Amino acid sequence: MVNMGDVPGLAAELQMVDAHMKHLCQSKSESMQKMLDWVLEAKGKQIRPVLTLLCARLKGKNVDATEIAAVIEICHTASLIHDDIIDEADIRRGQLSVQKKFGKEMAVYAGDFMIFSTIRRTGLKNKPWYGFLFDKLETMCDGEVSQFDNRYNTEITEEKYIENIIGKTSAMFGIACGAGAYEGKCDEREVLAIEQFAEKFGLLFQLRDDLLDFAVTNDLSGKTIHNDFWSGYYTLPVIYSFSHVRNGSKLKQIARNIKEGLYHELADKRITELIRDSDGFRYTLMKIDQYAGEARKNLDVFPNSVPKQKLLEFVDDIQLSAHKMTADPCYLGTISEEDYDKKRKMEISCTKSWR
Image (cartoon, rainbow, N blue to C red; front, side, top):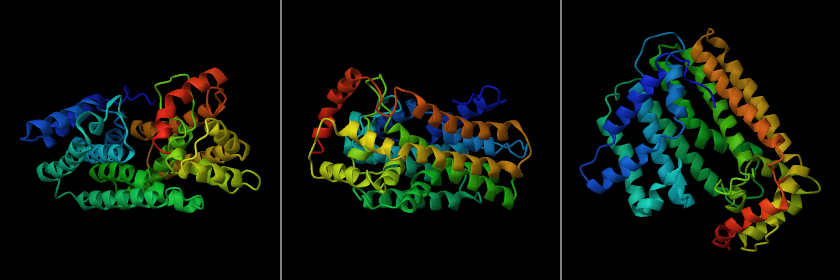
């Protein structure tokens, strides 16, 4: 992770972001407030608030972007609550998800309330970028729907997949960076550059996450391996491998079998082998390197500064972690048979529910 301890005043600003979020998420209902408090207790990595605050400093202006950062983080957090309902996820940010702890119906209301309460309470309605926030929220929803429309589609193209990422992932990074730049008195050319940076950053972020879906570690409490593949959401390593002359048809057959409820205990291992042999992981790393280079170039319009350096370090961190992940023998299906078997036994209950 990028060290933010050497950015003067940032820790205090993040505390103000937390205070704004608590102020914006208040309910007269005791049950609703319990859910809101539960959500706000788990802060996550706060990447979007940090990006907003850094972008507001790019021109060296002394501005308060903490409420902006809070509004954007609330909208993002609300979207995660709804995501967890759809995915039936039990854990979010190291604790039980809202839908797991309070029930799906209550979780829907909590996510809705966070957005509606924020819209009503915020004092930012007259800001020039405020309408842009809703544009990005619409784009995010469209991207999520497009992803769902392409579920179990073994013919999905790389172009369509990238389009979906720009919608569902890059959009919120776009408003986080763009709103910060607006508030920091950046001109139109600079705002455009930071929005382009955010788009590439979102692609980097998602493609690294695509690789994580194939990461098998000795931590048996970690993320379920191949969760996206088993759920019918095919990511870039898979999409690239679908087109492989020798392995593509084999991988598609496994995908069809999973869709039809045919389960085989060695399927996970075979999936990883086929993608690795088709250079799906290597190709994804190549695209990560490409987008990292483009993201850095987008920042060339800004003078050297601590905020700019931290944005560059964010890019470096994602790029390097992706390379380390795929080089580690504990990842991408190369762990010991014993640890692999333990992992699979823990996941059989999950995979049976998809049969």
